[in-house]
Image (cartoon, chains in turn blue, orange):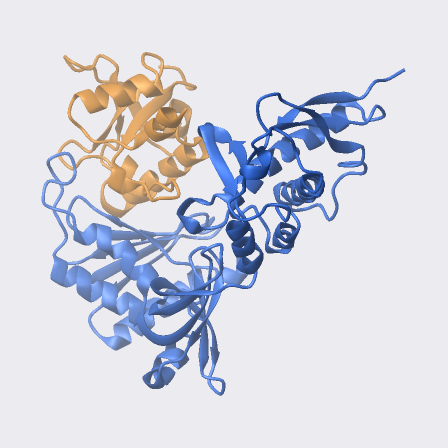
Length: 374
Length: 128
């Protein structure tokens, strides 16, 4: 007959007047029961977070798992909690859930004693309500200590418990600044939606003089906006929105500009002692024209310096291997692409006037597949 | 050298973008002799080739390679060219091919090298 499997899980330490004679008041048992519920619920959350394609935890993930009060060690109010797996649970099932139960133990302790007053990313808002029960038995001056990794100790006091319950709804304001792309503009409601580099969309009040910028840069992935203002954060120190005082600046053609930046910093001798640095005046002219004329729907080229002080534009992953050799001194571009069963496409362009650039970018449009075609 | 011999090329950091794409320039010949310096992969590994190159005080972001058969396939030739401090040195000879035709051949060689991927990436090796 199978036996239950168990192992030591946690030994909370209770401190305070009532615990001095090394006994546990009965109402503490309710706290421990809540702790068990929290561990099980949090372990399921952590499993689903680690398996984003799953809707539910595997069948029987936490069924049959319990925390048992193993013993109260003599000389202190330190109940030893054991993690007990029901006899019917297969080893594979235990191995599946155990890492998440252990992670839950760690995250609960981190939540009680967060570093930098920021709640851990892994602890969801929906589970904070458990702190209205967990630690309810603690009276003024009493505390429950939970050991966690690195020899650290999380301390739950009545005050900390109240803070945690309130944290679900708390919002903190702090001056902030961040950059991203402008993905939404609401002219009537006067707000912008800026997507950060981390992919989060933040609502920003639209400054009075921003309408024209919003029309020009709204939806343009290659422009970059930088926002400063009073940000609202939740208890996880996650930026929720910009509440007021927003200033928004736009760097048009940021993506292209970034590509030219490294080249502009080259010094003579950059190529193993040889290598001429491109003339910055001509490079700036070419960059500005590219930002102005390069079609939005074409993939951006990769821009390389040449040892002669010129630049080459190439595109990754295109079968015809298109490239543009740009002579910065003469401002003449040479386009080349291999032809499939036909002669290669080759063309030279002066790049002095607006008409030249229109002509040049028109050819690029016929030779380079648009982003949506790729 | 056999047709399957890999000729190893050190690529300058400014000739590779952040996503690993290398420019055709990595395989262009030097103007003074119209040849591209390589190492014979039968004599040194991609890692040794990189390390020797760095010891000679030259910059590299990693080793790429093309086979002798691929060199011949694009219409070029390669030959041993041992140097006093680099016995494995060999060259791809562009002979009389210069200018735009040479650029096209360099593109073809780059494509072969890119298909084979980076043969020694010092940053990846350091992370292991």
